[in-house]
Length: 451
Image (cartoon, rainbow, N blue to C red; front, side):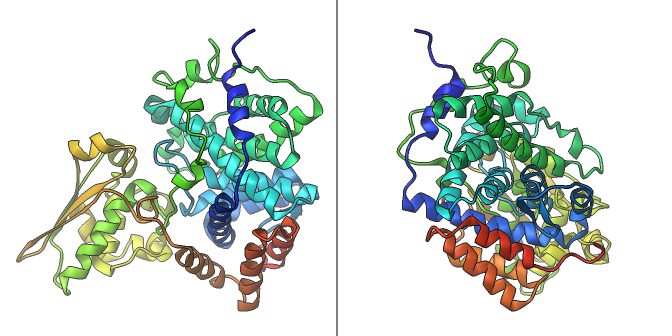
């Protein structure tokens, strides 16, 4: 008998049961995702996504800020918006953001099929697992050229939708393979002032819908899509670790290892921000003459940008976010808008913030995404060290922190009674209420201006 393919083995891993604690974590991620999606629907970053969805036709699922559309389009729309403000969850070892893709696909499928909150949350847990396992197995070289949220996230979306549809391991393996064979997403998108990164998340979520639906209808996939001689690893991941895909850890779902973001910027900047905020509290109003953040290679590669000129570039500029943190003691959403980009004190400090590679921090990456920040003033030098960032598993955001973040994002764009309605619908997911209760509340939110 032939050895089962890796997608078949992964499908068996995903078939294990989900318990109440797992669902609680999934519910926290759905809440965090909801705030990010709603906020993005009301900001310029989301305009193209809303415009695209309005040009499509369909029914059965909810596109936040746009209304009812098709299941696949809702998945695309909500995933793209969830990535827009860089407020999404992440897996450090996989170096991807499962939440935007997995939750968008799972919610669209759950709404379209009338599934319960329990079914939705189980699907989210399984989707995070598939995305994280594929991402961790892909290796570091894959990350140099490919956006794992896109290339690996589609596997997670397919796993989530397969779970909603109640597919068994055999059909789930085909769903994974169908989604995987259409995977894509190149990092050239961050080398230019482009916003097409949002389409990476959108297409990955959409591929999860089509992959699972096609598998349910009888389409078959290349089951050795991952390990085959012309498959995913051979084409895109020269230092892949296939064993990581089906590693023995089956007593704990990997969603418990996912990080949440307090700041709306690249996760590689967060440990430096946390350290800078600690140092700001020690400055007592003394001006900063310069700073140095000691970091790892990927943080340098992604976030070394002294003069950001757009909101998107600012979210990937350590010099900008550290200037905001050291001057203002905070990194709010407004830090990435035009007034802050050209504010004289921020513009003046950015060139005096140096980025250096730290070999010790590099050796601990990607298990830890740390930073060591040194701040210089006219009279003294201050130091703060972070091995992990706020929101990581070792420094988790508490449930009330996530609720405060979500409520703050919602309150900026809608009325208090609707904020309460969304919060109530989120809470009811754990009680097994219909997923459509949440979707229908989201449809009641105000349509963004201009649409």
